[in-house]
Every structure is written in structure tokens, then in C-alpha cells.
Length: 184
Image (cartoon, rainbow, N blue to C red):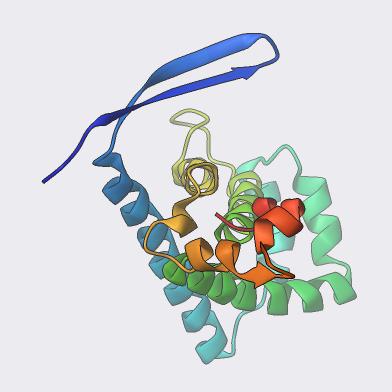
């Protein structure tokens, strides 16, 4: 087994964070990607196959009941019929697509972004702070952001190959640099 440490350094707004990352960490990054992919795929498939998913009751009732700071927004969304119809499709199928993207490592950053966005909405909707502001929804949001930040789709995933796909004699991400935000 070969392993080593890789030095990391990042500066944002004048603050620098640096440290060393052991190369064995790649397996844990892969495990996080696969865990979240499987969890979202399973949750989405369950909703799609049941055919009974409806967000209306949740949007209107749960956030006000738990004291969410954005309860009024959730109630307004739950009382807007076209929005509820959209959410009734977007949540189950979004979970399926996010799960598939993470499992195969394709368009990983895009999938992780939408996964983090969904978890932020779940965090605000499932507002439960009696044990502090950090709960499972918040932690999952950070896992999604970590998967995106580490470019986890390049680890035994399709993103590694998609990025190198040649378009006009150049790798895709060299020809279209904005694609780096979707892949990785």
C-alpha cells in the first residue's frame, strides 16, 4: 500500500488555511459520495414508486409547528398550487438524479450543489434547535459541499473521463472552463 501526505493551502478574504491531507483520505471521500448517492437514490425511488408523495401538508404545517424562522415562506409555497405541483415532481426525481449522479460520479458538483440546496431547505423546514443549530440536515448539507469541494466524481467516477473528453482536439474542461463547476 502506497500513501503519502499532500499539502493543501487556500486563502479566502485574506485568511489562509493550510494543512496536510493523507492520500488514504481519497477512500473516505469516495465513501461519502457513495453514501449520499445511495441515500438519495433510495429515498427518491421510494417516493417515485409509492406515487403518494405530496409536499403540501409538510410545507403548510411542519415549519410553523417547529418554529422555523422562514415558516411564512414555507406556508406561502404550500398554498401556491403550481409550486406544490412542481415540488411534488422535483423532490422525488431530484433525489433520484442526485443519487445517480453521485453513485456514478457524473456531474458530481452539480448533483452535490442541488443536494446541498435540498438539505438547506430541509434544515429550514425541519427546524429543530433544542439541541443546538447543528442537526442531521445541516450535517448532510456539509457532506454534499465536501463532496463537491473535493471533486469526488474524479475518484472512480465518470467525471474523470467526462473532463478529458475531447472537443475540437481539446479536453472538455479546457475548451469550456465553466464545465469545471459542474464536474469533479
